[in-house]
Picture (tube, helix red, strand yellow):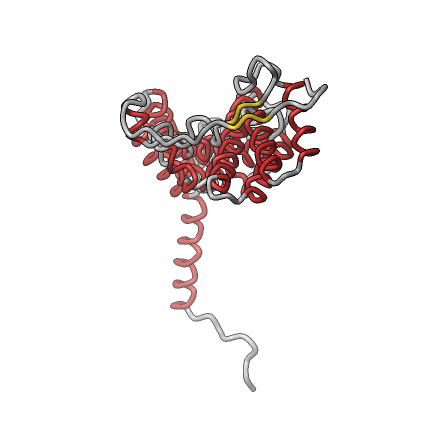
Length: 314
């Protein structure tokens, strides 16, 4: 007959006792007790928390001293070592700021997108949207923009459109955000850039006799970017296109709109007639002409066009 349980010999009992003792020591080593019999915090956990806190404080010191490169290294190390720690989310948010301040705009934009995706309910989520918009906004700024205006037609407008979309999203989701006033002012600037770009394209078409295409661009400005600095120029482009296409009624109607809303426009003479120079002011100048304050490489300007105001148009 086979026994159901093997018999315990002396050697087996000895081995069992050693195993039970080792297990007891292991369990007791996980916690310690003070003199009052109360359990203390786990020493290993204390060490982890202390390391995380020290690393975060160092990163904070780097940010306060504007040492953003060191702050980036420390915040990235903090996020890598303690991805679920108490400072993880704040570190991600401050990392966006540090990258923005070091002009690592693409990285700042990507970090902001990641933060928005991972923490959509964060109390400071509007700040992530704000930094995302700022990163795109500052990609649009170049010291050469004011000089190479003849190359505006070839300029990549994607950063401008992206910045405008980011700021619009912020205002839509958080209209009462503390960043809203600044965002609104930046959006006005971006709208002017986008409208101006459309007029540059319209001027490009006009100089090639593509008046229908130019008129479509001008109409797009009036419909999409109303009340911008480009509005009167868009009306003038549309007036000239209709005039050249022989659309007298449309020309007179648009001329009436221009004279009523912009009676002091510089293109009106003392008789209320619209004087056109067949180009939008300053957009046909070369870099050499602008740098030399107009002394060199002067553009050839066609004779002015005089569009007579119809009776009662003023």
